[in-house]
Each structure stands twice: as structure tokens, then as C-alpha cells.
Image 1 (cartoon, helix red, strand yellow):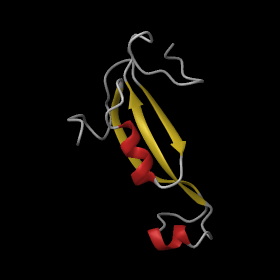
Image 2: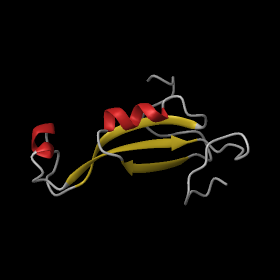
Image 3: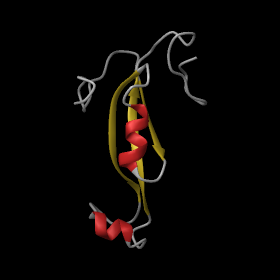
Amino acid sequence: MLKGAPMYPPFPSGSEMISIGMGCFWCSESLFWKTKGIVSTHVGYQQGTTKNPTYREVCSGKTNHNEGTSFSIASVDPANGCTFPGSSLR
């Protein structure tokens, strides 16, 4: 709870949840901790074929998972806040 925001919904009205795969989620998550407009960040394994894989299983390359970061973006003024391509927050 680094940002003092909830890790699980409900998030503020008008916010959106976006998930991205950027490799090591510990590194990619920290890129968004201080980004204006980000409400909450979450990391985990995305896609894949193994239910609830362990770190070791994912590292083996046999589960088809990728490490991903999800974050909730507040509905903010695009001139002063954070927007992403493809987001309806413009």
C-alpha cells in the first residue's frame, strides 16, 4: 500500500484498470509508483496454461505466462495527468 490506496476494487469512480506485460514485474511496477494519476499498482502472472504457477514454474518457460503489472488510473485532466494510448482517458 505504498500509495495509500486500496489494492483491490472498488477504485475511485471513473478510473480504469490497465494490464501490461513488461518483463520483471518488480521493476516495471516501481516505474508507476510515483506517476501522477496512478491510483494503485498490482503485479502477477498473466495468460499462461498452468493454474496458479509458482515463480520457479514460470521461470522454466513451460507455463506460457508472462510477468505483468496492472494499475488503476484515475480519471484526471489529460493536460495535467496521465494518459495512455488506447485509453478512453483523453
